[in-house]
Image 1 (cartoon, rainbow, N blue to C red):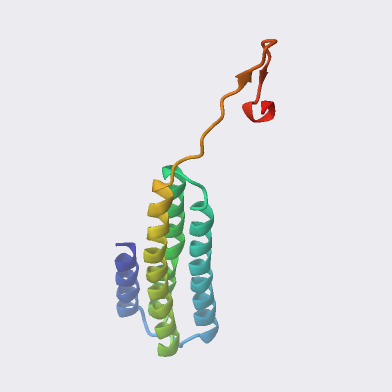
Image 2: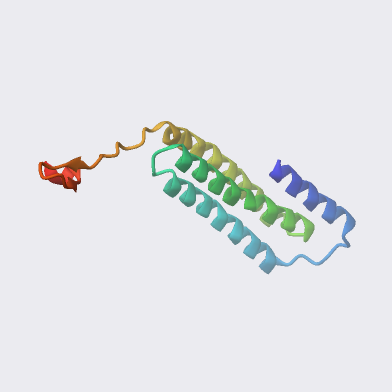
Length: 138
């Protein structure tokens, strides 16, 4: 949904804005930032999903989704700023890469949500009534 909104805004702005001279420096910066956000989204999703439990899976899914949706807005800015076609093709390829990464991460998030939480050891009481950690007693 956010991708469709971003692209609609980009196309709308490019239709109503006066044509500007293409700026390759801006296009390169936007493309580089889109690639950085794809890497950030994948890395953040993998890192957050390395912990077990549903909370970790939810945190990983939200963080990855936010980071992986940013390339759509950079692509919209490229559409609105009259970017050369080669950079637009690269931006759409980056957007497709973000989608593929998001779908690939979804499987990992599901496994994370289904992974059982580690057992928590309760403190054990010793003969003299002191409470000690059960792992230290054995």
